[in-house]
Length: 121
Image (cartoon, rainbow, N blue to C red; front, side, top):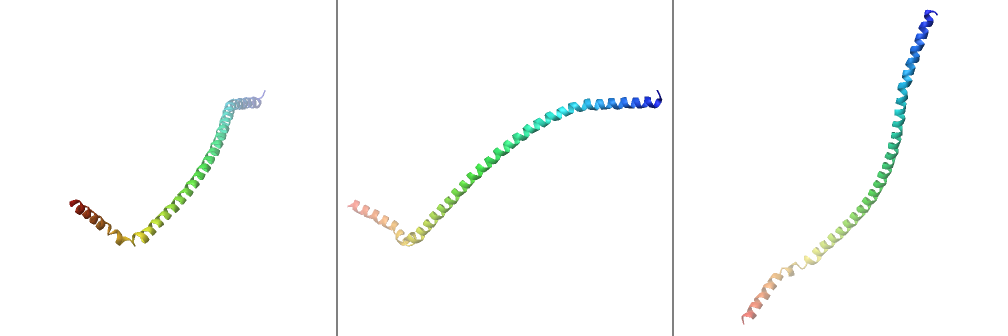
């Protein structure tokens, strides 16, 4: 055997041992990656389900917000109508009858004097 053949043989053994070590170290890593991929698929499907649930919840909330918005608009119209009615009553009836209303205390005073006067006899 020549020295070159011995060197080639030793190099081939070193390369073979290196490849064997590489394969032996990569197999557990590949198995671990498979397990990680399985867990990732489960997590991804759960995230999809949660996203769907969240979307349906958001849709329900939006519907309820629309209902509440409609109720608030209706309440605003009612308050505006009542406010306008009270303003109309204030302008038309109370303002016109303010003179008569100012006489109410005088009438009460007069009635109390009559009661005292009739009660005194």
